[in-house]
Length: 325
Ligand code: GLV
Image (cartoon, rainbow, N blue to C red; front, top):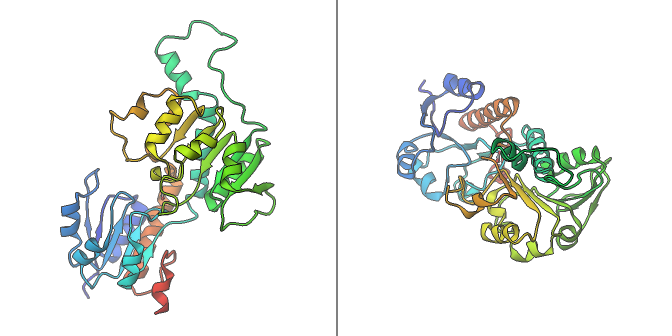
């Protein structure tokens, strides 16, 4: 019997890729960069399954280019803002994602960024390498305290809660804003409205998915509510922050610093004015980039893909309503 045909938009770790290779007739895009749009539209034609990355916009046009036999779209990410889920649902196509397995890795990186920005670690490293370190000095590179500070979590899902757990170890006061998440047993976190959170927090960390309600959530008005000593951390999605408002807030020192794993756009162009700022740390979207997390993501994405090809329910499906028709 012919194997199902799939298009994989990038080389993922071998754990997942091996599974796919065994079960499918696999067309693998081996370039280091995402397939250009036109190539994607051509390569999906006639496939039964598609495994894509957060860098691949999968809209109705891409689904139509694939054709009516397309049975499953598996995203190698927990976030799925790159996929027009409603369009997939309308066509009866289940969409898979990779929740849970990257929670700790992303929470760890969030804390790494929080601490690095507080204590100016990256700036201090640049200082040494530039030959500027002449002596120990009482007021050299003063930063912010983490212990005892107030942490405001915008979004209190899996990753926000995992960051809260880490923050308790630092004796932080924890506020969160999330209309849909309740308190977490054992974590003394206080639910607030967004305005109170922004006004009271020393660190504001973003953990919301990107959607029409969160796009540019951090805008000029919301930056103006933050303390001048506050630090913004973003390991969620770049577009949750308005980059122009962020630049103004950092440049005019209306906030102390920002530490980003994600940006708008990604990657930031090398002439972005954000890259000129000393009080900005920027990483290349590596929140889930621990070996174990990425192996598990490859496996979970492969399992979602294969389940969909077999006509089984995806182990992790973002649009389970496709099964209710
Ligand atoms: C990474 O950003 C993901 O959504 O998995």
